[in-house]
Image (cartoon, rainbow, N blue to C red; front, side):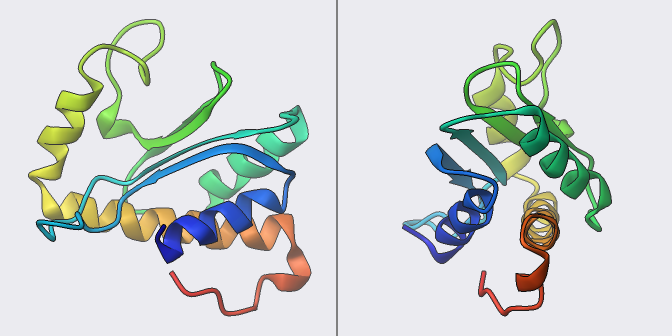
Length: 139
């Protein structure tokens, strides 16, 4: 479990208890290349206020790539739009793994997306727990 994973869990938990969490974006443990960043999670009790806070963090964080949050299923997903497919549910469309694989070949994109994810987590932490926004929290 990486420090970034723990940080994402602590940050999202400021909004409420988590049922599930998945983070991609750290370096591959065997090969060392940067992986494509995205974040998936589910709250024990999802609600509109939690979604508003997360959407505000995504909208206001200083990012280099365009991101989208999908709440169409039980698990919410925060993902760069570059990974989206076509159709009714672009996050869950066929070929997601192929799009991730193609994006991983662009290591500059992966690095930018990871910086974006960190910025969004910082912003979310500030919105969810304003008094703790200035505390150092290593990535």
